[in-house]
Length: 249
Image (cartoon, rainbow, N blue to C red; front, side):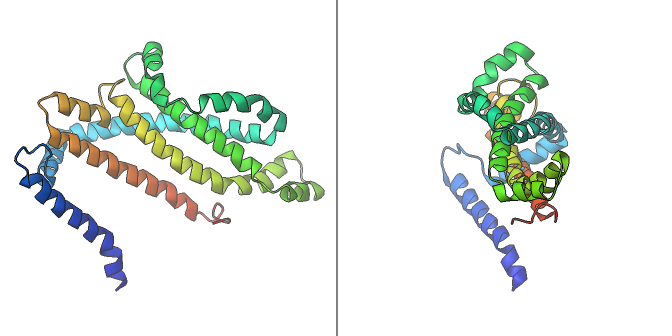
């Protein structure tokens, strides 16, 4: 019985594929490809070596842009959240920049870095930096004051207070923020590749559309993007199972 319960998602996906096949093949104009055609498109891309090439290109940009954001935004957010005066000084600037879409920076990124990897990495960094910074600030502000006061009463120094109070208190919120921001970074890299670079999964979609209306390859690229996004999210969710991080779950 448990085995059948675990198979329910797969049965549901199979049902959607069957409905998709009938709906797409029943139309007279064939404007949308069938799952069989999309599968054939994936095989074509794989046999030509393009699928792996584009996946690696997109993951390369996300890794650098998102990784740099994590290394800079989280320490900055923790520092700002820990220092009340610093937060009061910088919060207006952060709130001013937060509503600006990362895609609005595309012309500036191309102007500064040209058409290439650096432009896409810069956009991913921007898309990830502010959400991670604000998440870290919020995580510090959510620490109950009694935890900090208890640590100080027990004579903890500054570094001990950070390691034994700040770290375990903020990590659960940071993991959630990192997971959500990684999804944003994956969305932005696809959009950036449609404009600012000439490789990657986003470029695949635009190129397939322009090169003879190959909508089977367009949907194949969309399916690949969704599957990789699911794998990235699953990998981030696995961090919640680490014993030192899951005490508040």
